[in-house]
Every structure is written in C-alpha cells, then in structure tokens.
Image (tube, rainbow, N blue to C red; front, side, top):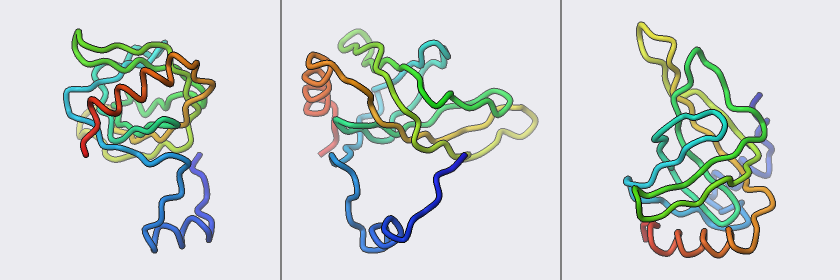
Amino acid sequence: MEKPITVKNLIARILNLEHRDHPRVRIYDDVRITFDPESHQGEEIIDLSISGIAFTYAAEGGKQLSDLFELDIQVEDVFHMGKIRVKKISDVVLGESVGTHRVTRRVGGRFLNLTPVQEYDLKKFLDQYGIP
C-alpha cells in the first residue's frame, strides 16, 4: 500500500526541498545488500543516510517485502554490517520482466533502533562509499 502524497510533501518536491531528517547519499555500485530472512542477493542501493535507505530488488511473483525486515550491507570481503532493522515506507513497481513473474521494485525504508556501533559503522561507511 502506497502512502498518499500530502500537500506539504508535494510543495517540498516542487521546490526541491529536502524533507528528510538526514540527507541521502548516492552509493558506489560495488555495494550490495542482502535481505534476511528473504535471502534476496545482490540488490542495488539507490541512496542511503544515517536514518534510512532506498534500494531496488527483484520480486518473484510480485511478492513484496514485509513492513518490517532486516538487511545486511556489504562490500565484497571489505565491509559487512548485518541485521539492520528496517521499516518499509514505500514500495513501488519499476518494471516487470516479459514472460516471467519477476517484478523490479523500489523500496524506501527507515532504519529502526540502530545500536551505537551500527550508527558509527554506518557513518564510516557513508564517508567511505558515498558519492560526493
């Protein structure tokens, strides 16, 4: 279910105002996420902040992620941050593969209850892998 657009959000979008608590940062392509327990592999991060994430994933048969889920962020064998709890804010269809039941979706989510260590690691990650 999609969240309705409010007048406040519409005006902010038109005026290109940031409506987030923390600005989102684009991330280099070699960074991937894995869902737990969904076990989707190699999903692409669109952008990331200390408070949330946006990413794409391929859903078999149009199956959506649950409203609360966990994910891991990793860069090959260099960096790994696991069991990050996320609340789904939006989940929209980007496209559908012809002849299959595979649907590409874009999800926006808010991190829940990051530990101080996770917050520290996430800040370091953003400094190292964010695109200025």
